[in-house]
Length: 239
Ligand SMILES: [Zn+2]
Ligand SMILES: [Zn+2]
Image (tube, rainbow, N blue to C red; front, side, top):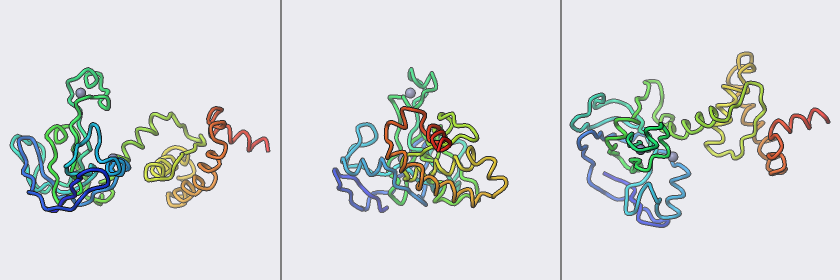
C-alpha cells in the first residue's frame, strides 16, 4: 500500500509498504478520510512525539473507513462495517484507569498510520474505542470524531448555561466547533427554535470573529482575570 512514513523533523515520504494484516483482536480498515490534527503538524515539525510515536513510523491518527479484514477473536465487527477509531485506548488496569481517569493512563495504546491506504487498528482500540458510523454520516465528517469529542467534553466541563455570553479564543477547527456547539446547544437554544439552524450558525461564527476573540485578545489578561465574557456584557450595559 501507499503510506506516509515519518523519518524525522519535517521529513516524511510517501512510500510503498506491506499491506497490514490483522493479528488477534485487530481489524484493518481501508481509509476513506484522514484529517490533519494540530498534533500531526507538531509531530512533523519536531520529528516525533515522546509518547505517541518514534520515527521511522507510519503517521496520522484521525480517520474513518470501512473494515476490510478482521483478526481472530474479534467478536462485534465485520468486514464492510463503516467505522471511526479513536486515537488511543487506556489499559483499564492501572491506578488511573481504575478511577476512570483514562486520559492519565500511562499505558495508552496509540493508533498511528492513518495517512495510508489501509490502517491496522490495535486490539485495545478495537475493544474500547472503535465506533460505528451511521449510514447517513459521510466519512469526512466522521473522521472528525476525536476533535469534536474534545469540544463536547470541553463544553460539558465549562459549565456554560443557556443565556451566557462566551468567548472562544482561536478560530481553528476546534475553536469553530466550539462556536457551532455553543450556538446550537447552549447560547442559541432559544433563538434556534425561532430562527432556524442556518441563521444561528452564521451568527455564531460571525460574532465570534468580529467581536469576541479579537476584542478579548486586545484587553488581554485583564478581562480574563475579571469575569471574562460576562464582564464585557456589563461594560456594554453601562455604556
Ligand atoms: Zn487529533
Ligand atoms: Zn491505564
